[in-house]
Amino acid sequence: MDEKYDDRVSLSENATRFIKKRISDIGPTLDSDDSGIAGVFVDFTLYPLDTIKTRLQSKYGFRASGGFRGIYKGIVPVILCSAPLSALFFATYNTMVNTLKTENSALNPVVYIVSASAAELIGSIVRVPLEVVKQRKQTSNTRSAFIVRQTLKKEGVYGLYRGFWSTLWREIPFAAIQYPVWEVMINEYMAFQDGKSLNTFQTALCGAFAGAIAAAFTTPMDVIKTRIMLEEKEKIEKIKKNLNWNMAKQVYSQKGIRGLFAGIIPRILWITLGGFLYFGAYEKTKLVFEEKCEKIKTDNKSKLGNMAPTYIKEETHNNNSIFSKEKICNLFIEYQEQSHEKRNDETNEKEIQNLQDSKEELNEKNDDILSQDTAKQ
Image 1 (cartoon, rainbow, N blue to C red):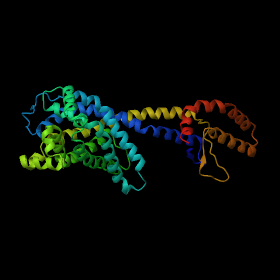
Image 2 (cartoon, rainbow, N blue to C red; image 1 turned 180 degrees about the vertical axis):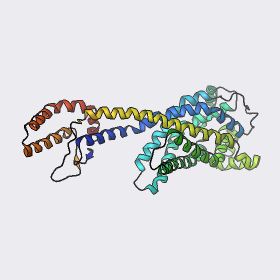
Image 3 (tube, rainbow, N blue to C red; image 1 turned 90 degrees about the vertical axis):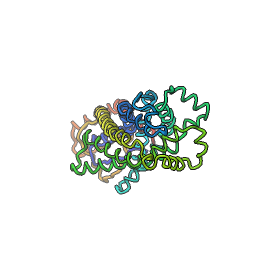
Image 4 (cartoon, helix red, strand yellow; image 1 turned 120 degrees about the vertical axis):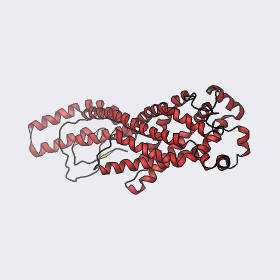
């Protein structure tokens, strides 16, 4: 369907709206790129905290699982998958938000929760096998490739997805807390500043606070997920029914409530600092991309025929004139012809002729942009 524009505003303003729509169409791509960069930066910087947390949660204890030795074990597959994972999450999250968001602000928290949960579900398809290999590497001296081979040999593909549901049991509540809190904090912060956009530091601060709250509340789910991924196949088979609940009872019987919150300090530190760096890096790289988009928008605006600050005022004041590939020039020419009839201006007549002569050339220049609109009809 063609875009709708207000025929009572200038052609240049309508052209600007058109370009903004084209830029918004690639929004998820931009979010994917900048979130991917942010994800790699955070994963590499804070990986040692993740290793310490995993070893604290292991049933063998911190020292037996490696202590402070080799705290970058398993980093290679994490870094290789970090960018696509972060990009996949934010592309899904932002697409869902843009699709579900309504003018009713009271529903926004629900939209953020649903969007974050959907993004976690999609992301876990890739994340869980990586998490299984990473955590087994963090608590042993075995090579990552050997872990993959042995897991496939003993358990098949299912072995790489062991802990999938427990991961969702952790990630969905985490996302349902973190992202709505982050969005609400940003909105409240902006309201406090009379609508002024947050800078990178302020955005990062909101991310850190939201991450800390989510990390604290979901630590027991994280402990259960870690224990399921690290446990031997034979022992998992014995408690396979109601696995998450049975593992929680097992941890509690062995170490009490402290066992369910094992690794909470490095987890909060890891996610708080990660939230600060991730959302800060995300916002910073997003600004860079937006500057590039602004340049694209400015360049294309001139191509779309920012010909004069003329206002189109038809007798009917129809608010929904449709501008398609041909009409952008036609409407302007039509208006100029109407003006000529009223003013009988020779200069204006010449201008109309020039516009008619250049119409075909202008449409060719704009074809790479406007054909996108035609393809969607």
